[in-house]
Image (tube, rainbow, N blue to C red; front, side, top):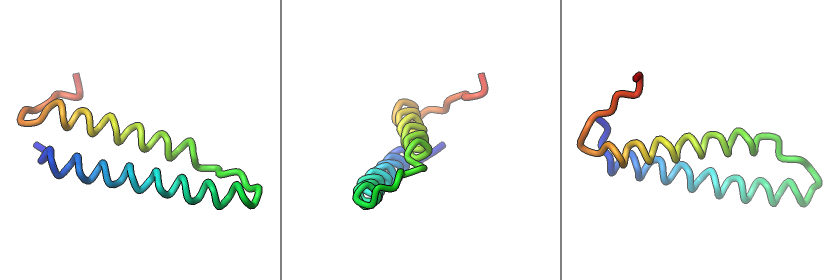
Length: 68
């Protein structure tokens, strides 16, 4: 079992850092006319982190069978 509070804090911090990095890198590159190539991958990772955070929150104190 995952500790729910710690898991949600870590995932929240990682998602927040990804957002700040996207904002800073995106603004810095747009000023130079460069296309930011990895924004779709970052969006995918943030979405996966959000889904994992929801599952950790929804199953707090219980177990979940993710294999079916």
